[in-house]
Image (cartoon, rainbow, N blue to C red; front, side, top):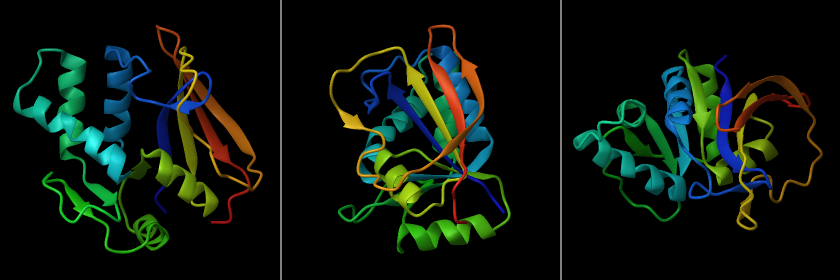
Length: 185
């Protein structure tokens, strides 16, 4: 069975805000490697629209090796977008989901292939509630945002996580690898 991995950046005070964190070469390489270990990524509308930026980088490479490699990998990986408002999407490697997230994820997990990633805060929350996440990779950046969207908002059930390992980056970010221990899947 394929593994569903929730991977997201977060500030030290628990907020998901891509503009607050520092995505240096080392972080870009980390996410390039993670994307290379998967063959599908799930996005909600907002994150998908933020990630569309990388299409322009692929068309006009920056000369920054880590950033350009990330752009190429993110451009190629198949994306499934969950949205109630988008009617069509233009990214060639993306498609709109036509069923609910639980159905799609359960089907994907049964298919052969590499890991499945989920990189949107809203989808991570939904999938945590459904007990479908197999691993959480939370990259905590040494930044205090002061406000924003909390990662685990509206989760009412107690969830116990087992720390599998950590990865520390040169500028002080730390990725925490957790496995939910009370999943029902």
